[in-house]
Length: 83
Image 1: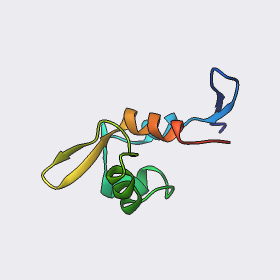
Image 2: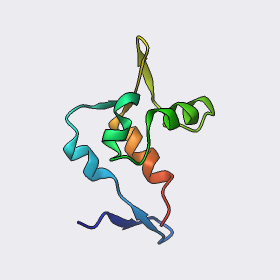
Image 3: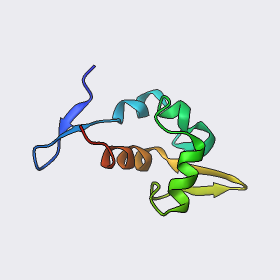
Image 4: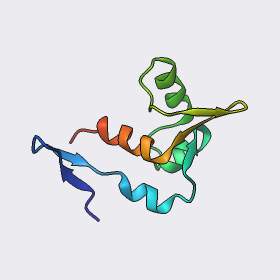
């Protein structure tokens, strides 16, 4: 399956939209991030990125759990990916 696309400048980009089709919830908890990204990121990396203000926008907390909306997380992944 080809997950490549081009942005407005004609640069090759990787699409992570396929991850949404396989995920059954509208959010991903920080503890699930390694499962969602198939090992590309882990909870500690996301914590560090969030603390540095470089994590995905839209994160929210329920009690002590941190979660990210799936669409925002995918957009953030795509914005940080280069071929």
